[in-house]
Image 1 (spheres, rainbow, N blue to C red):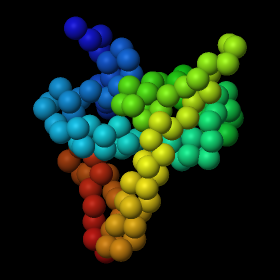
Image 2 (tube, one colour):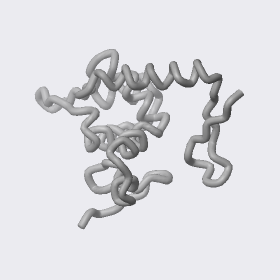
Image 3 (tube, rainbow, N blue to C red):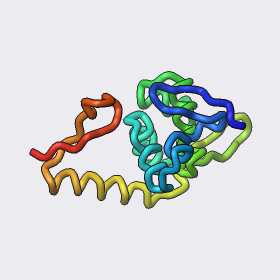
Length: 133
């Protein structure tokens, strides 16, 4: 039985992977997009697209707390999008699926082509809602 922790509005198991969508019976695609639905994780993914980094590098470059970076890396690792290699006492994180950047570029293209902007959903204030301009 997983041990549940709550990080903001997401249920996370003890491996750090976002599991709310999976527990609710959502498709793997929905779980993937749930993992990418956090701005901090998107910033981490974008930084790792430029090359591997240590937690200390990410905290300094992104201006985030070490605990925040570690929790989000654990989520991304749990979803199979990020992994690390150990070198001595240091861990270097990198994207496992570089094609993830193609997906994010395609999403940017869809938003640009439709003139859509994402805004918080009024009902939950957490899920994005697309508004067409």
